Image (cartoon, rainbow, N blue to C red):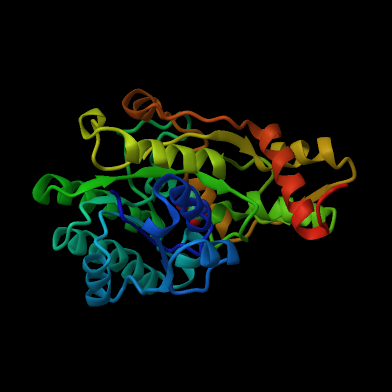
Length: 319
Ligand code: AKB
């Protein structure tokens, strides 16, 4: 019987991952925790507790008291926010991971999921179809913390037998929670603003291309990676995960197919430089081969669901 802890359950990934894990393992076996209050669906559907992952003693106590066997640690300061508070972001991102790795070592919670990101790549990385193993010189504090985290995860796996598993998420697109301070937030904000105002001022240029993924695909693939037998995993750092690559203008055009009057203006800010340092597209053939990574959503299919769901959220269900 698995007993699961999700750290960061009120965030963009956490609020959806908890629901999927509860379906799989049973509501009472999935403990949602965060330093922020969760959406009602999370609070009412199973155990929720305020827990600060930066407090090592409390974290270890939680793992032991609840007989936790696997942990999903999603707590992080994302790329845009991290550039505003570099040292603090480094401290938070690294301490959140190191506390979890160490608490896993000292308890029975030996299986650990931790998200890495396309931010591990930098301006010297090949930008198109970026391979799994390549030049990695990230120039953002978030990217540096993710690359260091991958190295530590692999180290704890080989040195201490922690079953560390990770993917390099592309930008994740979802409708349940508002974006959380990342560079890829424009690809979520644009849908909300399309429904609310019919127009959007985009903070990257029209020709900015980045890899993205619909949240349903991200959750399915996370569960897939966590399910597969250890002997299938040829990597213990973090797997490339491609999703779909499109420019901001292609995203705009996709929304226009459903909302013909929608307009977008482009006013790049400091996040343009971050976006320019990341790959435009990713090669995830190793994830496909090792654990069957696959996606269901292309750009237009995702746009249809995003607009429908946000419309229902803001205006009530269609008759
Ligand atoms: C961000 O933009 O910071 C994140 C990421 C790509 O990891 N969404």
